[in-house]
Image 1 (spheres, one colour):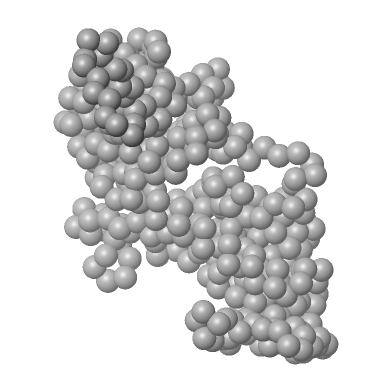
Image 2 (tube, one colour):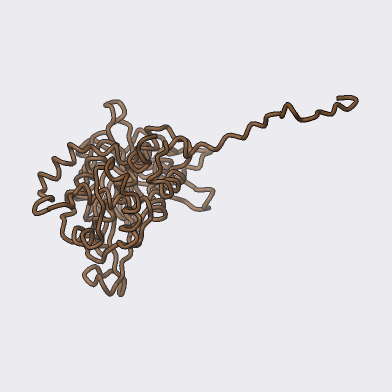
Length: 380
């Protein structure tokens, strides 16, 4: 193999499209040596190798200068990287991530009528003394990463970063809605205007109602000898009813695992109640994704205190995930992505194919020595 594992991971980066985005954002303006692509490569390397400081990143990346030529990058300096993280606009990295997510989410027309999108956010804590502008809940500082997640290809399709004090429902107006999709989210996105927007584009949604939701039951179906407690057609009352005037469906089931009743609200009158409950159960996959990136990528320990640098590091963490996911899919790797990330962190500059690294070593073949005396015992 003539290319390193790191190059195998980043070769799916479309250089021409990235150069076009760099030119449109002007992120290489006044740049003499350390280009945007050099910056991107260094930050992806920091994510995949698990570096926790600029000093360690500089030493680790520069330890293999012979591999830089094929990467299309050059050696990095700690001070240059620090200045780039603070000064270079993060919008160009966000545009690159959006482009990669769009390529991962490409589907045919038949598939687009069936896909499911999970919506949720996760809070990323920051050091309160150095991030006073991001104060959240008394003496804590934090930001929120909002994601729309595709559970079929296990990849995000949309993202947004905001201060943690902003409520989740405030991002509803920025969400890209696609006709025919089914959106699944929790109570944090209980917004009648958002529900009406989903209905307007011809999509469906599944969510949990709040305990104080006012509604009137107009029709009811019975499902005897099942776990379905209620299957009702309702209309919203109060202020939500003025924003969403169409009928909704309220389903209540008994969860044997938790020993309690669970209620769901949806505008889907075609699926069976069990299917609605199963759709909401899939929402747990986005929680597992948040857990994965926090455990395997660097979005909890930051290389700088600058808010722009923190935002850039989160974006490059998602870029690194997408590149790993592409490598995992295109090579038809069967082992979990977590193991691929662990292997990559130790062999980034090795000249070895990923399929050989994940393949267990063959058992040594023992050959009989012709000069060895053989003893034949009776009965053998």
